[in-house]
Length: 133
Image 1 (spheres, one colour):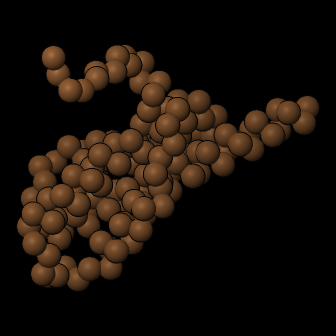
Image 2 (cartoon, rainbow, N blue to C red):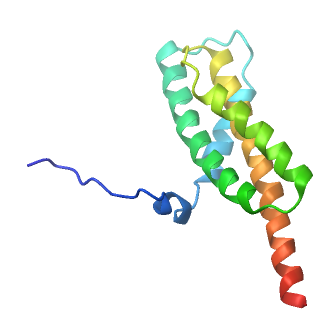
């Protein structure tokens, strides 16, 4: 018998319900983007940070996709779709264990959060307008 439990979630509902752990990841993004390009960071550390940012970036991208599907603002939706395509490309790229690789993923997480905030604000405004009518 194994020591773990497999969750069956074909619709991805668990990911949509659990909140993102934003603050520590954004602190990591800020720290990584503050490094010099030639910073002396061990390869194993870069690989681990890249793995962390990749996983979190994919979780944020899922939230952006969910909000993008219901967005009525065409411009906001199109911009989010561009960022999502870029995120799919960058986050699926092989991790290189370099500062440049880690910084590229940090920039992608930051861009995804910018789109998430914009879409979330638009959804909140739309809900408030609907409630007031």
